[in-house]
Amino acid sequence: MGNNLTSFSGSVPETEVNAFALSAIAPSDPVQILKTFAMVTMLNGIENSGTRETYSIALFKFFDWVAFAGARFTRADVKTYIAHLKEQGRASSTRNNALNAIRR
Image (tube, rainbow, N blue to C red; front, top):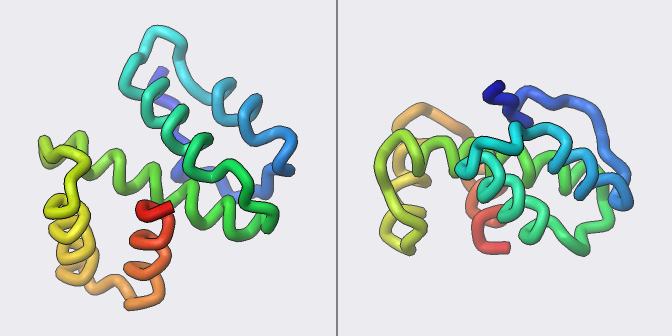
């Protein structure tokens, strides 16, 4: 199935984040389940829907990069990812949003 929330552009009310995120994955895909669980856990308690949306996109892109790069979830890998974003010409605000989402 391979659904991915990185292309999602609408806002999701906080009460629907868990149901929305969990309904967007194939139950037989353990990597997607883990990514979604991590995202929901990390976004728990963020009241602003715009912040939740920005952070969820940043987290899914990070998790996709981790899987593609064969990285782990270490401090060094986060630094490498931020450097990767810089090499791609991403704005400092984009890199900061990604870092803030990952740190959460």
